[in-house]
Image 1 (tube, rainbow, N blue to C red):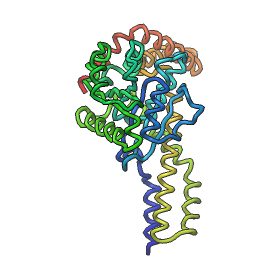
Image 2: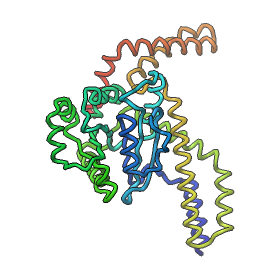
Image 3: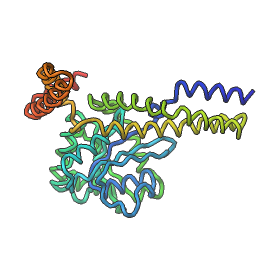
Image 4: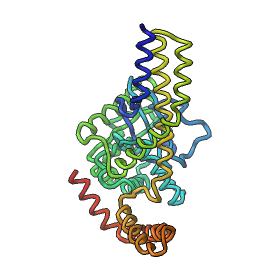
Length: 343
């Protein structure tokens, strides 16, 4: 009878695969210099997340672990303090960050050094606002990461004297905390404080989302279904093999484990596929209307030349629309900000 229950459970899950992304978890976008991003990520998730050769983050990287009985995902973005990437590459990496943290991050984490609060370190938030919108500020948590065993109160006193930091903290609704690496190594208290602070921010503001994230999530779910469909034969063969090797509770356990693995694999592949398809800018909402209208007008102009003329006209019109969208970026940003504020 146990084997029958396992088979029924397997069939139901094939028809309606579990959605891993809906499980209780925390997703965080991480910004800052590579050294501090890597140090914080290793402290929270484990030393093996980055290799010794990874000293500069030039590509967006997603890392997930179960920490304190919760699935924690950190999405590290390219080094913003010493950014030498061409705009086109940076845009692509930030599109990946959107896809890797869909349907939206619970927090954006800006990692800074409390002992070197310079104008440049404070300036790192500007590209974040530029690509994700001003709305992200109330979801941003400033983490002042340090490895020295010093009294937190003395550090706080020094930091609060820094004018640039005070202005930054004000923009981020005073959401900041100090993260002591040495204390975290011995008792894990700093990670707990970080997760607690993010939970508090989520209770107050919810997760961060906008048109880009919503559009990306829809695309990912569609792509995920396509990928899952292509693996149906492989999945049936694997599940049949598990039935031959296991029975009872062991079969149920192995089946669920396999289905979770295949679901996660499909999700991650879908995220990568969609990231490559999103277009030429991280803030594609600013250009969407202009590109769409340009393509439509171009297609009408090419109608007389037949189908091929329509395709060429649409492509040229879309390019013109994108150019116009760039020229009116400020106006679209204002409209977009009004929309997000209203929702």
